[in-house]
Image 1: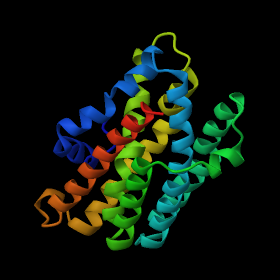
Image 2: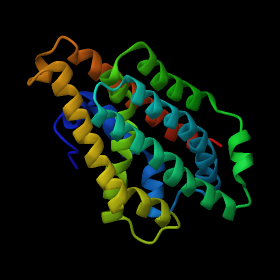
Image 3: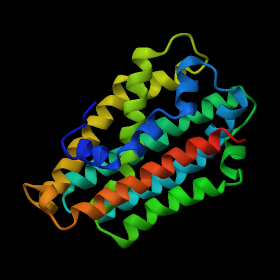
Length: 223
């Protein structure tokens, strides 16, 4: 999956960190069904909290946007996170006896706090494109993971999770986010983004968010 032209360049710049994220043992355990259920539920609880902050970050992107089109795209992602992705977590956890009030009140792990506050800080201290660089590894990484597992996974108790992130709705959203990034980069960096003096800083932001994503999976394996 390419999801545009800028994202593949950021992904390449992340190097081995990207592979550590999208091929993490937690991810492989989802695909082959060996991930312990307790680890999955622990991850879902923390990811629900993550999505609360992630939704706020996409809402911040609305205020950072430079065009109505950018505002509309970011508002659509915020809505999808709150009304669709978070509800996946609520539904699965409810089957395990964990209600939404318990999810919202759960204690936030340090790995979660570090990642979400990094993203929000990127948005508050930088511009729209800085924020997108921090947001991209989650949205587009999950799309890449979901698409791969949808192709490769066999029998697994995590089929619903895989179907969500590998499904048409998520893949369409990822394509739209990739186009949003491309347009934002062209407007702010010009026709050759890599020639911009800002390029290396954006790659560093993307790379840090990628490392924090891998750290989130690490956290998932240590309930």
